[in-house]
Length: 550
Image (cartoon, rainbow, N blue to C red; front, side):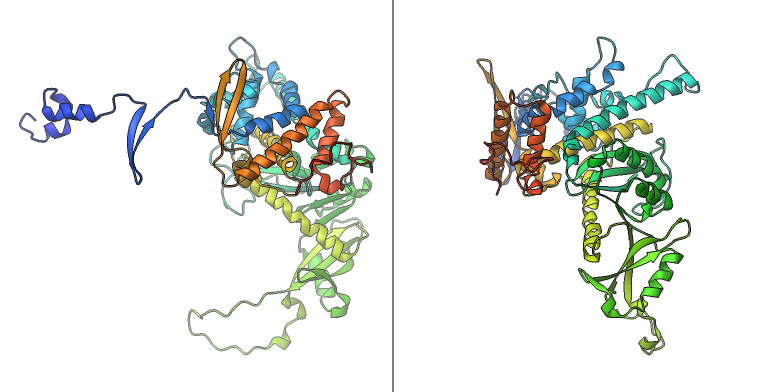
């Protein structure tokens, strides 16, 4: 090793008197927070400043102002059962834990480990009443049930666990209801569906069931109930991977309906082919609730399709988008009575002839020997609505928007992540994400009621922007440097939002909190309500004429 000529090259620091080594020391950065990068523009001097009060979510104060004016956020924090669990002087505090989960969900994060990316934000946490952003481990363990006095096998442990589960469920369902409850006085449609959440570990409830995207992969099933057209989540439940049937959705569906006065119940319940069972149909019929479901092509359905396929073309009614429909009656095996169905069909698209892979015997086109129904694609709906066929088909066609909700929640929000070992915390996080999603949906509609913007476009426009905080003479100032090309539109929308919020603050003493929230929802959904107040035909109070949106 002494005679190794490469030693001086590999370890120049070992010879402090070397001229080459001394010259290298002069070119090295003298401090770790300064460096130089060679770019296509030239040499750029960089300097790290971790103490600077800046944030990438520079427009978040507008959203916080909306949550404070509507009293949604502080009610959510105040009702949280965490104070029953967080004991001792060293606990992180419910404000910090919920604020961290709120910021993580709003930022589009999918894992607890991603919380580290926002922990150095010193601008926005104080605006939420927080003293700090907690660590990922603290956030992950926050809602974990711990009973040190009883064994997990004991009945007392199970009772305490069920009590904690019920407390969290009541808290979350109550605050979800605060978002949409005032809207239920208007005619509305309840849409329900399920989605698969693939898992990659050994979590509780990770079972191999129906998973078309990742066959054989364990998963959780999220049963979701939403208000059609508004994209507001009424509730969501997380089940093990094999519990996808309608029998698991039905209890929460019926509780949502039964908890409402008759005048506030949905005018229609929509669902896919999983809900056309006797139990679901009978329970809705006994409550005099209209329903519209797609049904599977069982043997009885195929027999009906074969029967109506020979109907004359003039008996079929055009229902739009290339489909034609015809009404009928059907009693499936397991149904207790005959029910009204609507059969719709459209011609199959002809495929372009491809190049044969190998030489085959030529076939003559004996088209006249085939049945007419082989030329069509069929779909069957079951309903108790007394409406025209085009109207019924369009109502079901509109529920395709629910798939957009699932796509947004799983890919742009956190429904695809925040996984823990126990099912309870996964359930709690699914509802927290749904809560923040509802708040953000209402806020973006307030900014522009004419459009429904998904998070992939609304976050860069209405949330992102470099915010720099300065404090002087007891005043806090945040300077926003936008990075969006349409920053002028964002500034115009935020100015409009501030005008609305300032108006509500000016009339705060004249109305109760619930009355102000009804007026705010009336403004958010003004294009649905045609300028009327929720639950009445009265127009909005004076002062709202100035809040016109494009």
